[in-house]
Amino acid sequence: MITSSQVDIVYLDPKDNICVAARHLNAGETIHVDDQSIELKQDIRIGHKIAVRVIEVNSPVFKYGQPIGITTGEIAIGEHVHVHNLKNNPPAVDYQKATLIPENPAPITDRTFMGYRRPNGKAGTRNYIGVISSVNCSASVAKYIARHFDDEKLKDYPNVDGVVAFAHGWGCGMKFGGLLHEMLNRVLGGIARHPNIGAYLIVGLGCEQSTIGYLVESQQLVMIDGMGDEPKRPPVFSMQDEGGTAKTVEKGVKTLAELLPIANSFSREPIPAGELVVGLECGGSDGNSGITANPAVGVASDLLVRCGGTAVLSEMPEIYGAEHLLTERSQNVEVADKLLERIDWWQWYVGMWGDDIDNNPTMGNKEGGLTTIAEKSLGAVAKGGTTVLKDVYQYAEPITDNGFVIMDTPGFDPPSVTGMVAGGCNVVVFTTGRGSCYGCKPTPSIKVASNTPMYERMVDDMDVNAGTVLHGNTVQQVGEEIFEKIISVASGEQTKSEEHGIGDEEFVIWTLGAQL
Image 1 (cartoon, rainbow, N blue to C red):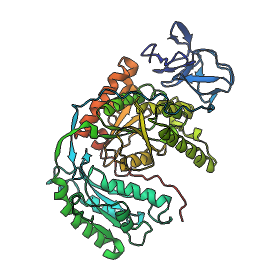
Image 2 (image 1 turned 180 degrees about the horizontal axis):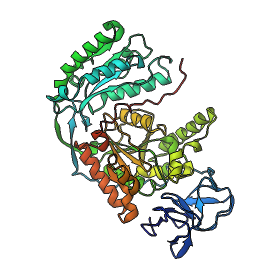
Image 3 (image 1 turned 60 degrees about the vertical axis):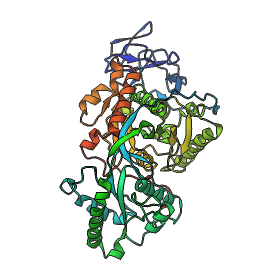
Image 4 (image 1 turned 180 degrees about the vertical axis):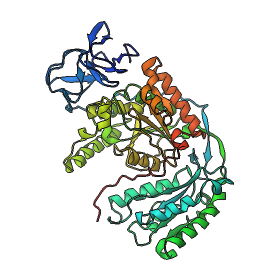
């Protein structure tokens, strides 16, 4: 809870030996923490940490009431606390598993959004047609087919949001049926089945390892108008069989034109909010992200769960250091163990390349006041709210639970969101402190700013200003605002990234394994 000046600093927990600047502060200024007056030793930028007590060398620094690292030198009261005097120091943790399971919150049963009901029962928030490339070798053809259908050619199909090419950099040079192949198949299959896709076709080169036939059969892909008793195989094209680039584009354009009336036949109707599956992402975080935007998204997540919906926390490297807060609220020991297994895997995987997870905080994160991965993760997990952790999913695995869940994704935003969308997320909420301009297709991405200066500077890219928490609004109030924005966007309101047309180039698949 914020217990000091809303315009100068934020002091989060009585155990903390630092506070956080809520605005740019100058050397010599006096700040007030509880009954203490502190003169600043240096200029302090918004989001950066200030010592409120003398902190001895090799002593822990606390934020959110949790250790975020140890000092590399003595730090005086009023001094800047950052990379020059603080380093990561993962403590030994005695993990508590399913020991603090939250009670089920009171249900909310009367909220709906205007979405697209699909024949398989799923609910969409957008209505795109997809051109899915099985391999990079057919990526250009997929894009040529999609680009043919500009606004003029779509004007007679008002219920169609657009035609999107799902092109990527993989599909060959890998073991058939291996880790990389199966991950790629999960992603492409998840896009084909996605409730925001009203129709689709698949295009490949013909000789690739990731064969279209295996994709269709292993993912059990059918056309959206054929999900009843007699499934209809989706249209597929091999450039080698069709006679090359131009002929494949020509045939793809002709076939897609025939799909337009099918996709356009869907229209919005009231759907329970419990059918929303919301991916939670943060990118370009700063020192205030864990104080304003992320906990406000956590409030929205709790409201969504109360409606019966699903909130999906991502970026496993940015859970590392805060996983103990999640294992204790797991619904059972098995779920806690799944989370810890993924944390252990990431430490092994990163170490295999001679790296360390503490290198996750970017230069931009550090410019914004974040110092260690523990500090970043403690703020990041706040997006998950306070309800019970129901399950932990592999990358792009179909999400079947209602409630709060986690998906194992990397810390880089585009492949992280791609995995959640392939898993079924029909809305994304994306917090940022430095100012990410990310957008996604086929799923709308709501951008939440952590601070007002950035929001005002980049208002054309931001959807919600959580920086108002630093100026008097409560986290609860901003969280309710975010929840209402989720409902509005799910019902068709365009996000700022959609207004800019962003999302065609942001389809990025996380790739593992040897390239052969």
